[in-house]
Image 1: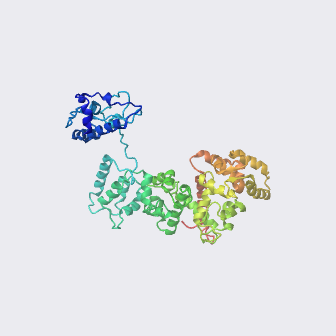
Image 2 (image 1 turned 135 degrees about the vertical axis):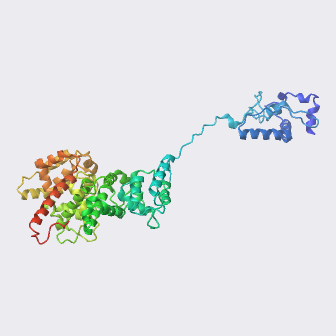
Image 3 (image 1 turned 60 degrees about the vertical axis):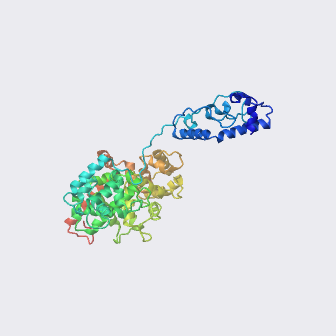
Length: 534
């Protein structure tokens, strides 16, 4: 045995100094390296070594403090012990750059502490869940409170509630406008059984996390079709049907189905004109939240006079819009052509702006008849014409004036539209205004970032933008602006919360009512009334 050669050198081989193993580093002999490898291999083969290594690995995995282990291992055979360099701390020495396996200087024994414990483990912070696919679930207290209210309303109806009994649940439990009740009922009663049970309501409203949504999201999910990501005009029909059937302020329309339908259409068109800013006909949740429709809907339960809800639902506003359309639609085919529209406002508009409207530059017509405007198209037109302070109106008329569609209005485009205004002023013996003066006036009113071009953002940043459009294509309003009509100024000061459209609708409703009274007194002497009978 090769190990015996080493043992025979000295009887005290078990006391061999580890430094004796440090062979000259300059020229280590192959035999010395071979002997060291033999010793190390033998040490690794010992059962005690395997047990030691296993214990160290277990300690490292469990993270427990390292135990102290015996520094000597009994070796069977002629050698009773290994050099202490192999036995110290129970681990073999590590090699260093000075030698293939050993260094010249005595190295301190490596620590027995697990390397996994040498770095302080960072404290893990639990991040609460912030995204819920189907909405945030309700808190326990809120859920219990809601279930208690549900039990109260369903206590006398074990088999469920019918649609006419469900309105109280919509208003008291869901805190929603009662006119949404039929839409909510049908959303829950997917099987069209005619009843909504307690369990079905809890499954939809509480388990479906509708309870924790904001009001706009609740209404949006109730009205939209399943698997649809937007609201269409038809989705508002159930709301309007219930409003016409039950609101005290609309009871007088119960016998006139035609005008009920026209009223519902007008309300929906107004909603989409003001809220659907993308103009796609697809109303998103974001657009619904940005608008004021939810506040107007909540007023419906609080106010019996429908005309006091001037946003969207006022019957007087509908009356004004429809009567204006009826006046222009000479053959009453429910379409308006260029010759009809040029008469609007006592021939207030120029031919050039009417041509731009019928070129569908501001908005593509919904009419299927070429060269004619439908009632919906007219609603968009009249809302834009009579309230040029609103953003939808500014966008509408900006597209008309921007002839080349490059996103800016240039002096040449301004001159193109003002030329006809100037000619009309001369025809009525009005002192003409030179174009350069008008251009300077417009620039002073808008104060654009670049003097020679006006952008849509420039117009939205000025309170006088509406007057710029009147200067270009509405002679009557241009003259009223120039003379500073004291009547209009007083109206604005009396109630600054009213928009230009609100004030126009007030004046027009009074005018139309007076004309209707005169017609009734004359016993209907005209062959055909200018407005439909209401």
